[in-house]
Each structure stands twice: as structure tokens, then as C-alpha cells.
Length: 326
Image (cartoon, rainbow, N blue to C red; front, top):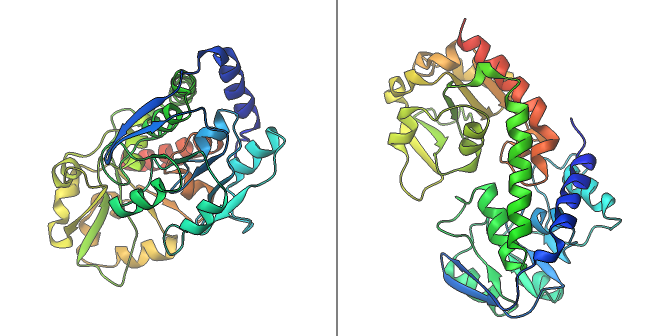
């Protein structure tokens, strides 16, 4: 997989180029729970939820604490590889890691004495927000839980740091590299991709999928693909996932390829089911299987992970797209 070290230096160059453009304080950030005022430039930054810490890291700020990685952490140190590389590039050690296996560890967050808490991509509730707000100002998601795009994650969190312009520059930088990489895979243009949540042989009565509000699906769009009409129609507003009865599997005849979590053995077991076998993409093997590894994790894109997996992910999608045309 591609190293993010070069990307980290590129991001830092962008930040340095816009270093004089930081916002004046106080700053106000609106979100699903109202508005948060950050009175002074935060020095001690903490985050909860998924990958919010990557925004300050990309902007050259080392957080005092963030959530321990629970998926795709090959060496069990609680850090994903692109985060480790970014910390090394900044000459920093790992900060406090919060264990969110049973929800937010409020005491651990409070122990880091943060000036601001980033949670733009998370599932925090109103109660969580209120509790966290007693610790420090909280930057919550703009609309609904777990529907924040990586672009929104960066812009929302960067605004809370008083670095809105730097955040916008970083988004543009990443978008440019995505566009350059995608140009090498014209076979993906216009192909429809469905992201199935998990292959679960214990319950074949329904098919779970990530909705068009989920950034895994939106990342496929970034990579030149389209969301199938059936997925758009079955997606509920504000929901990041949905389910459809397997008896209605014919709805997905317009799906060119499927991305999902699982292995070849699980896919073979699924394909033996009479209803699943009617799913054209699965029947012809137009499937990208993701494991509990960095690739599987980064299919849910984040500011630092995109470069790490971009070329490999595009290559696997292209292979599945080729099978769709056989």
C-alpha cells in the first residue's frame, strides 16, 4: 500500500502556504445540536468518534487524545498505519487513546483537559453532546449521526480549530489527487456500485446496505462510479444504512459490482442460497471483498487514509468492474 509520508509533507506544505489565514476568535460552528462557540484558539485538541483526529493531524496539530482504533489495526497498538506515519512525520508520540468499545469514555476525555472536542463524524447523542460540552466546546456533526462526508469532517473540524481556510485547501489538495488517480481507471466511469454491509449467512432474510448518505457509498462516487437507482430509492433520509427483503433481490439487477466485508468462503456460502444467486453482481463474481485490515478500514475514507489505499482500492474495483462486463 502507498505510504502517506509523502502525502503528509504535501499536506503540511499546503498548511504552511496558508498559515497566515487562521480565523479570528471567537469562532462559531453550527451543527445538529445547535451552535458551538470556541472563544480562543485551542491548544489541547481531543476527539471522539471515527477519525476526527485525522483533521488536526493533517493540519499539523497533534491531539492530546482520540479514540483507539478497533478495526483494521493490524499490530494492535490502537493506531491505524496512516496515523502512525503522520505522527512520525510530525515527530510526535501517540497521545492518550480512548477506548470507545462501550461508548464514549467521558472520564478519559476529561482527563486530557482539552480546549475543544472534535466529533464531526460520530454518532454522539444529545446526551453525549451535553456531557462532553461540560468538558470543553464540542464540534458535532452538521446534520445526522454517521452521515458526515470526509469533506464535511475536515471543514467542520477545521472551523472549530479556527483553520477553515487551511481545511478548505486540504480538501482541494486531496480532491486533486483523487481526480488524478481516477483518470487512470476509465472503466469505472458510470459503473454502479452497491456497498453491502456484511455477508451474514445466519440471516439471509434481508440484504443490508450502506445508503447514499454514507461516505463509503459517496467515496465510490468520488472514484467515478454511480449509486444504483435501487439503493437511492431504498435509502431513507438521514439514515446511513438500510435493509431490503431478500425476496426483492431483483431490485438490484442494475448493480454492476458489490463491495462488502467478508471472505471468499463466506461469499461462496451466500451464493449457494437460491435467492442470493439471483443477485447478478454476486452470481458473476463482480465483488470486492474487504477484510479487517487497513484496506477494509479505509473504504470508509478519511483525510489521511485516502492516499494510503487509493491505488489499491481503484485496482480492485476495476477488476470487479471487468467481471461485470464479461
